[in-house]
Length: 126
Image 1 (cartoon, rainbow, N blue to C red):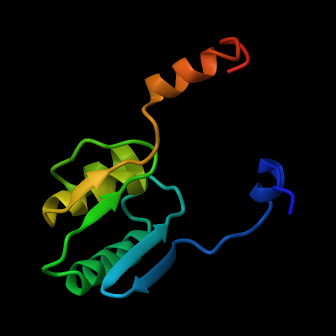
Image 2 (cartoon, one colour):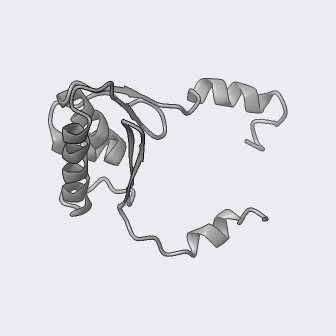
């Protein structure tokens, strides 16, 4: 099956946020895909916080980790500031910190990524 181009993907309308819960044995994966927004008044944050609280309740007394898209974000003390500065990634970092959950970003560090790209491409191409 061929991959679709970014232009093709952009034309698809997605309901956001999309929330997914998977269970395998006693383990759970909670996933939310946000409508990228830096607006603290966006109603999707109410759904995300409700989903986060369900995650905390369901996984109480279990090991937890929160994966953050696009690199780790600093923890902002106030929720509104977290969203204004970092969008959903900031909100997740804020909620995780507040709930005592470690955050991790599986994506490569931007410096490393650039160095790897520069091995095969010019700076202009990148």
